Image (tube, rainbow, N blue to C red):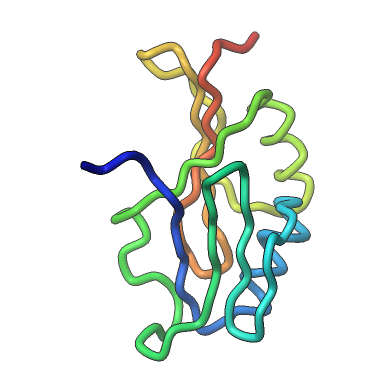
Length: 121
């Protein structure tokens, strides 16, 4: 039986640029740093960024998989990241289920979403 999501890995051939984006632009704190892999961790969930011999260039189909990063104040995060030059595809919008979503892309073109479960003013 599947018990939950343990983590997500984003493969790249631009490890330094991508790990810098997640670390310095998004302010994620690395849990583990290796020569070819950086891991960020929240509780039991991990987000990894690493090199892979079969991955070259930017994401060919960036909408195929989206990583959702949970936030408590989506409007403040949107404003903060927008000031840092993050390329937003979709500003914060209220979803039919009552939460908020906004969408941006990382330097490799992967689509990342900020997700706030509670309603916000």
